[in-house]
Image (tube, rainbow, N blue to C red; front, side, top):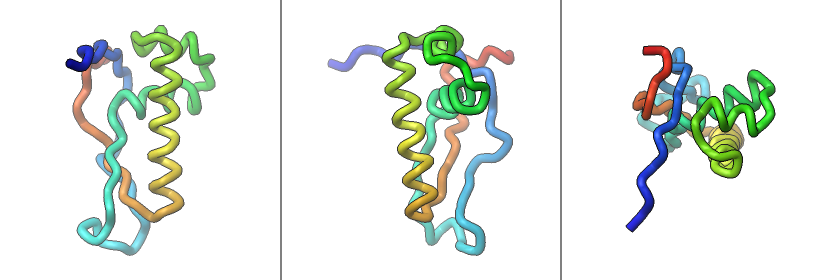
Length: 99
């Protein structure tokens, strides 16, 4: 049986629900879902430039877990860009600190 997922502290909500290549209808594109914790990890590490330990503390996970989340998120973003896929941003939040 898998371990239960640790509650993550999500501080941002995406401005849009998806990003896709221009000029191609959404129904014709393969889709990847970027989870809310992956988006938050990318925001903390890549956009805000936080060190992984500090970002992990803000997200409420270990540094190793944050590294795995960032790696998954970066892989999905790169795959969507290179292969022309739609990137859907998950709207679920595990624990939103804005509320």
